[in-house]
Image (cartoon, rainbow, N blue to C red; front, side, top):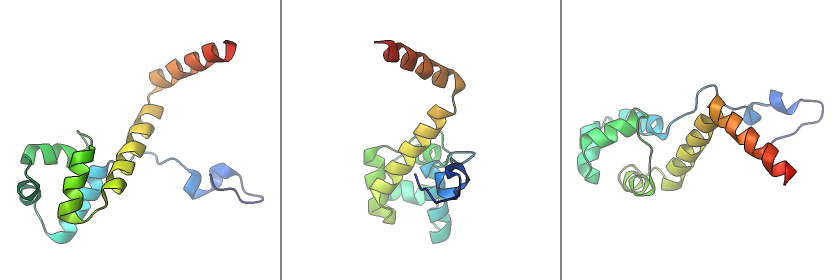
Length: 114
């Protein structure tokens, strides 16, 4: 967390949580558009089904380690960047789930008593 004298931490842009989490598929989609490549061409070059790649790009499926490494080899996007984006996305989605957060609060209350 970034802190600056006289400025509330929640008013610093780098400390804010995005309204909607960014799925790594958006980065892949943007990169394909910038390179004038099709999803089908990328899928063929990395040896996966076009439907699998499409699900990732649409945010319906996550990026795992193997897929991140395949995309890194094809597009030179660092695999750790894709995995970090996926991890951040997963965390933001979980924190946005009210029932899950209620469950966590309940567990924290129980743990505080122990």
